[in-house]
Amino acid sequence: MSESPIERTTLSTVTLDGAPSFASVEVRRITIAPDFHVGAHWHNGPVFGTIETGSVNFQVGTGPQTVLRAGDTFHEPANETIVFDATDEGVTFLAWFPMPVGVEPELTMGDAPN
Image 1 (tube, rainbow, N blue to C red):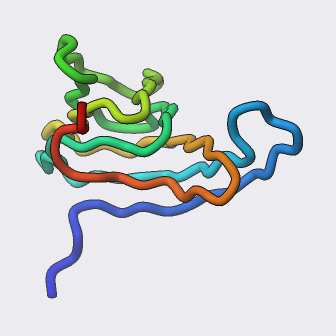
Image 2 (tube, rainbow, N blue to C red):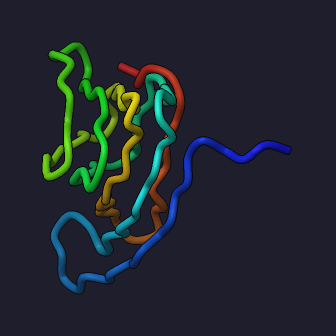
């Protein structure tokens, strides 16, 4: 079996007492191999992140596609189609997933339902 071109590592999960819209934030370091195209996908909650190394082609919905590089931050709104495809450098980034009580962060491939 070959290795996956994506590695996901949960760095921490923090419980936030009294938060109005979420109860915890999961932080992950994610590495995507060079030239790997994740493809259109969407999340069940918002994602906030920062690029550590490399670069990625990034697009939210039908908005403009941009290239994010080390130090750039991004926001992926919940239930929006996202493109996050590694360039020839590959990419490593930190991502924060704030979630309500009892809900786990999910990634669903394809376009978000409208």
